[in-house]
Length: 221
Length: 299
Image (cartoon, rainbow over the protein chains, first blue to last red):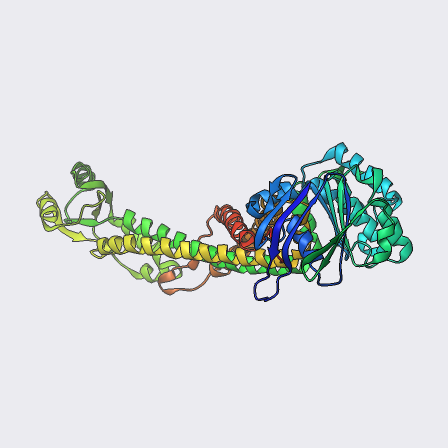
């Protein structure tokens, strides 16, 4: 599903590389933790995977597509096959929960009853059906992250990228979010979760852990 | 859940985003209104100058003065005879009574000045309009002068042809100036759209992350720019109309002339402004969004 071949990333104006010759492969349906301290390169690696950044060297393949050579106009179709969750939720605070979740479906061209049905299904999964008409900005942190997760899950992505998804949540909400990232909820998607919280690692049995430090891959378990 | 919630075309998305930032809409529409009003005033001036020019160019180029003993029948015959000349577009007999009445109406409120006249001092004439491009040259005048009962041939307005040439040059300049004004409006729309894009960059960045194409993100901005343009065009048309009403109010000008004879509000102006606003909205919207939207990197 994911393949990185000797990938390096150096941001303009920075001497040190954010990623240095990182190579790894993730199989379809696999659950992978990406760990490491702040500044280790976790976010950079995720940004490379959803095409927000280009690798300075090496190749980044997602679903067989080499993103390093993907022209910008082809990025949208790649991103519609991905679900991305951020630490800071990134919702449209004035719009309803329904509209926030529907956003990822609308851009994919879904409308009418199909869209309604799919949004309702996903809201049911994340236990937010009753709040569907509430403005997203008025929800608690845990609820907002569930909305963000519902938005990522709605199109049925093949790959889910989560960047510190529990970073702003209390332990109970963190646990709920992690449970929603495995099993039937994600429909067999590959999941890559970046976190610096070691307590999360025991929550998903059989998950692989990849450790990054100063832009280098240090440990694979 | 209502069915409407599932439908979100570019128009409804544009209306939604317009409603979210009314202050920005106010700024955009008022700026555009001023720009389109300037364009409207320019068009009204150009239209009226053009109309005046047509009226002037359409008037007689030569005036054939008949001798005092020529009868009205002779006047009509002469007009018919001159109208057959290839250089002549039309010729019309104007008797002295009609000429005096015309002069009286031109004097307007001062028409009573003519009441004390014992006799009509004006002669019978044939007013000749030359064919397009023909100048009132000496041979033509001699040719007309040689006719029976012709006392004199006068070039009515010797400056007319120089004016026609100047008008042609001015027409090109006016077109260039009009295009410049329009490009100014396009630039203004483009900057307004860039402001709107900047104000919604978080929303747009999020849309790029969930896979929105440039076209998907661009369309509501184009619709918004067109809607703003149409509203501004309506307001600008009203402003220009009000201005033309003020200018055409009865006023005392020399020789009884009135501005309302010189300033006409073209009926098609609102349509023309709306058309220009739609075009400017599309062009400016395309430029404004295209220069700002990013699919990669930070916003």
